[in-house]
Image 1: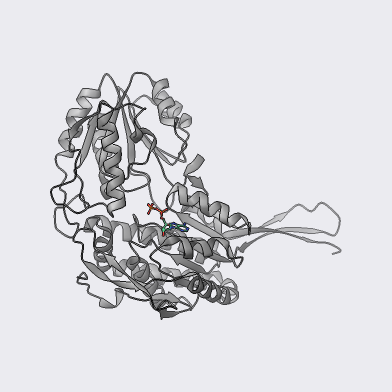
Image 2: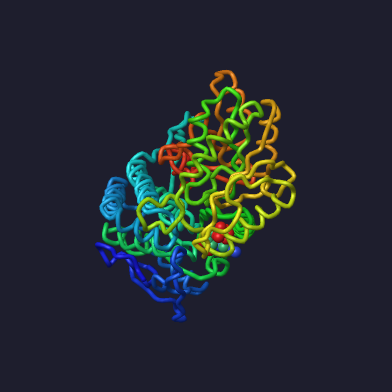
Length: 486
Ligand code: ADP
């Protein structure tokens, strides 16, 4: 059953290519399932590489006019899109909850947080400027121009079906690039609704395209290998990111990757424990643990371990698991069986190696893909959950005895996306802040993501930054123009 929307036109069953709502060339479709109920919300086209090539051609055709449009006009169109997204935030949130499972308040928050990127880059569109360099010869002028890179392929995940799209599409559009979006197979409806609003905002045909497919490999592979696509932006698993990076190498595309994380959350002996517990609970269980910046390893100094555990388990007891469309629910289902099986196997490995389930540790009685909020004590770095992204509502709590040990353990991973630490010692704030090998470090807070900060990772967590004044660079080429004989 589809969610009841104030604007029923936001629920789409076709893809959006060259300004037209389109079926798959071969006519195939696949269902979109509500993970909380198992019900089908509708169907969308199951597209192939042939469809992807058509969308890429439509984007290429739209490029000359879009890049030539005065920045102020592009900015106005983005601003209109932003206005429409915020106006329809309730509906977009309902749609998002239905296809993804997160509670409505969280879903609406994602839609508005995603819209903030559109607003931000609507402004940035007006601030793409160049440079005049000191000339190296007589009668010479030397300039640096910033130009749009060209057609952008955007491959997005299911955990943020709305904001991962606006975060890529709005800087691309601001820079003057057209985009072909391939949303995740679990959550294509939010992407299509955003396309409907882009159409209503007056963004020209072919500038925004959305193609849907039940398996990422074929359509995604086309975006990664097609020579007309000059930039690939991907958010998803590290395994697929590595594959796309190698596929994109043949045509030497510009590439941005936002991949997996393994976020440590360090609680030092001088931390404000109440603040640490509140932040850890939020950043562990938000989206049922299914975000790349979710706390993956809670590490607590031995002197405050017991006190932290008492407060943390009390906070976890307040979580309310259920269908995100219902009032008061804090924790929805996991996205699908694959996600559930991964969580189960990591918990079972930990229990097998001596961990103690202080809370939860099993599937939730609601069935389907619901999982109990879980706290594991007596964990150690030899367990699989230390090195793997859990992507579920499971908090392993490790013990450490010195700052040096905590930093070493925190950095002992190929990932480097988000990290957190709590301390009131000003010297330690600087030492640990600088020592953590992560693209994003949050001290004494877990709320740090917004459109004005550079989001991205070190090491195998990715390449490039999204959001902020740095984000638009990903969609621009730098051209040196030398004028001689003046
Ligand atoms: P997860 O395992 O969390 O679902 P993925 O990395 O598999 O994360 O998915 C993120 C996005 O990448 C989705 O849009 C998915 O369809 C797409 N995708 C998955 N496999 C491939 C692939 N081989 N090539 C291109 N895109 C892919």
